Structures are given as C-alpha cells and as structure tokens.
Length: 459
Image (cartoon, rainbow, N blue to C red; front, side, top):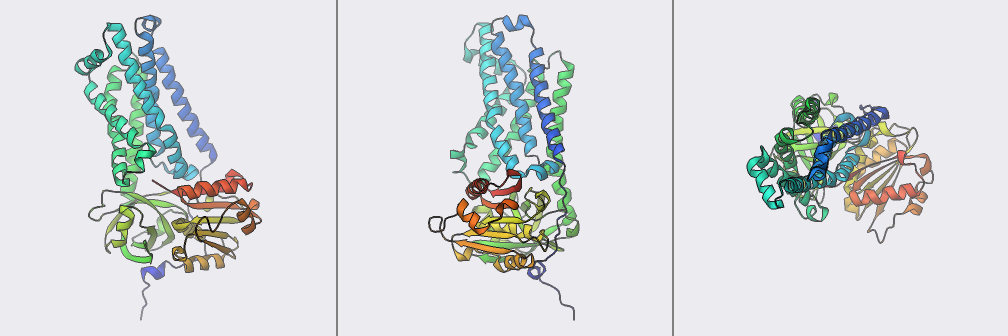
C-alpha cells in the first residue's frame, strides 16, 4: 500500500539548505546609481540650454525658466520613484524591498513639490509676460494650450496621491483604499506625457532632447509592464498554484499550504516573500506581500499569515482549489547576503515566519541563536518545527514572553543572550517599530551595518 503524504507532512523541517539565489556584485548597484545621477545631470543640462539669454531677461523669463527646470527634474524623479518599486529582480536582491520602499518614500515629496512649483512659476511667468493676473493666465492655459486639460487632471491626481500618502492620513485608511489610490500615480504620469512633449521648452527645437525623454518614458513603462505584469503572469502560469489546505496555527494565525507544479525550479531563498493574489471573490483584485514560512517541498509551498487587516483575515477562510497568482520572490534577508560565520535571528511576533524559512537555508553546523519576542505563549507559532530546525543546526532558542514593560529587551539583554554577537550576522524581522528598535539595539552593540539584515512588515 502506498502512503501519500498530506500537505502538512510534506512541509516538515529539513536539515539541508536549499537557497538558490545568487547575489549580484555591489558594482552593479554602484553602476545603477551612476546611471541615475547621470540622467539627472542630463535633465538639468537640457533645461539650461533650452532658453536663450534674451528669453531669460524678458518679462517673466526667469520664472518660466525655473518652472521648466522644476518640471523636468520633478518628472525625472517621479519616473525614478516608479523604477525603484518596479520589481527589478537584481536590485531587489541587493537592497531588499524594505530599503527600496524607504528610498521610494524618501524621494516622494520631491517630485510633487517640484511639479507644484512648476505650475505656479510657469503661470506667474506667462502672466508677467502677458501683463495679466495669475488666474486669468491659468484659464488661458486650460482653454488655449494643447493637452492642458489632461495635464491638469494628471496634476490633480498627483496632488491627491501626495495628500493620502501623508502618514497621518495613510494610517487611517484601509490598505486596500490606499493601495488603489496610490496606483493612480501611473495614470497621472501617463496623462502628463503628451503635455510635456508638446510644450516643454526642452523639447521645442531640440530633437535629441525629445529622443532622450521618449526613451526614458518608454523605458520606464517597459520595465513596469515586464516586471509588474509580464513576469508575474508567466511565473504564475508556470507554477499553477492553488490552495491545498488552510490550517489554524493560533488565534488569528493561519497557514495556507499551496500546491503547484515545477516548484523545484522556483528560485527562492529562505527569508524571502511573494506578493500574492488569491483569485477568490472579494479579494481577487488585491495583491499583498507575505513571507513564505517554509521552503518549497514540491509540490507544496506554504505561507503563514496573521489576520491584522481585511485581506489577511480573509485568508483563513480560503477554500481548497482557489487559484493563486504570485509576484516575486523579493527580499534580501537571505543567507546569500550574510558573511561567513554564525548568525543571530531575532523575530517579533509573526516575523518568525520569514526566519523559519531562513533557518532551512542555514547549514547543519551553523549554531544559530534565535530570539523570539512575543507577548504571550499562544503566539509562539510553528514552535515544534522551529525547535527541530534549531536542534538540527546545533543552535539555541531564547523565548522572551511578556509585555515590553515586563520583559525588557535592550543592548545589555542582547549581549547577555548572545555574548559573541560581534562575530555573527544578525537577521531581524517583525513589525516596522520592532525592526527599527532592534536594529538600533544591534548597532549599539557594535555590530557593523553590513552584518545586519532585516525586513519589516508594514503598509
């Protein structure tokens, strides 16, 4: 009689590493930064050569020049923002999505601010030249200049996205609402495209400038279509994932076991995550990021999710057979990015899921130290699996159970738990606040930044 393993059994811990990703040279990242900086230099240079001296000294000339300069730099930075989160695989593996999202957020105020200044200064410049009022000239723009209606709509969309992205507002919105509004930035950029080509001083009479900008716009659009649409569709079709089982791990926590094909060819490392789209009524249009909680054991793959928002809560009620589309894998918190030597893994709550899969990629003599931080014992999910993985790797687990007030975790505590922390790479995963505080504690212990790896679960 043949015994067929259940999905749950097939995902029990193994003792052999299975990471398959390779990390590109840091030289690649330096080259990317150089190309982006060179592009910004070209944009600024084209703006300076677009106006003659007589145009500058004419009435309203300086305001119009600055308006053009801010429009070009703002548009360029907006396109860079899009590229940063376009899921370029080699950039994701070097920096990790955490850092890319941080860069995206850091850049975000600049394009909108510069484009607002462009609108104001250009209108002021034309009003000065025509000796009319600001609002009169703005009305003239809308009624007389080509593509201004669509450009104004695009500008309004940008302002709306900028407003809802303010943290005080964003945290009060459902993730699905914020995500949908945020996607309209693509529409805003598309609406402004014709306006810029038709009226931008850097283009009028400058064929090479037009070619430069057309290449940038089409290149950005191509990257987005390939990596945000094409690659995910091809990968999802290749692996044909569907829900095989949903298992309750603890109150509000469920493991979703997926079944698919060719999972032995799915290049994913422990600690990484996918953006998952479950084709179930009510959520099929949403894609959310969740870490894998175990490396693939063909034909099965697993993620473990805590029900915090509407989407994550819904996953516990998924029906077997539900189709799943994937985008990824993403994340640089992998053993391929660590230095030779031992490791420390620090998990806050549900952050243990990513570290559980990462443990599978550690070799049998790695002697890892795992620190789990939870508020109560029931939150120690996947405990038997993790204990087995740690034992097989000659490691040790420290469980810190209790509130932050009762169970303190600081540099002194960390050093007492891991006396040789200076010799180890440190992996941290949990909520944004948890990760920020722990990374600071680790740095206070003297661990070099290049030995600290982290991913944060946040909006």
